[in-house]
Image 1 (cartoon, rainbow, N blue to C red):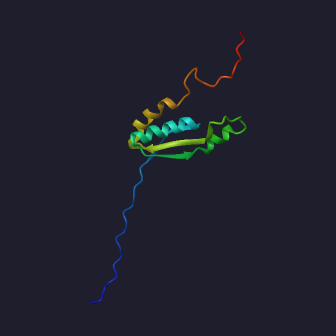
Image 2 (tube, rainbow, N blue to C red):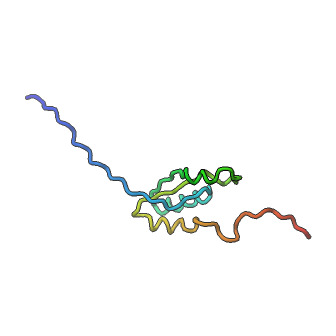
Image 3 (cartoon, rainbow, N blue to C red):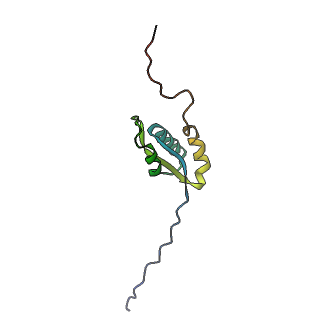
Length: 106
């Protein structure tokens, strides 16, 4: 009995989830806190560079906490929960920004 060559079954095409951006930041601390919150919630994410934003920042003095502009993306199924987790990181807290040191005048 001769063996006939059999081709393996064709693999099913994988469908990748649609990803949406939930946070654009150049703040290392905000990125770290967002990633920690997403990890804790079990939400899978992707971080990609935002080159068009980087162009607008050229020539500015950069603080040490600044990183290359990055975007966190999650699948559309997790978008609502992920946005609620990173919402506090969207804008700086009023009155809590960096202020120059002013020596005591007393």
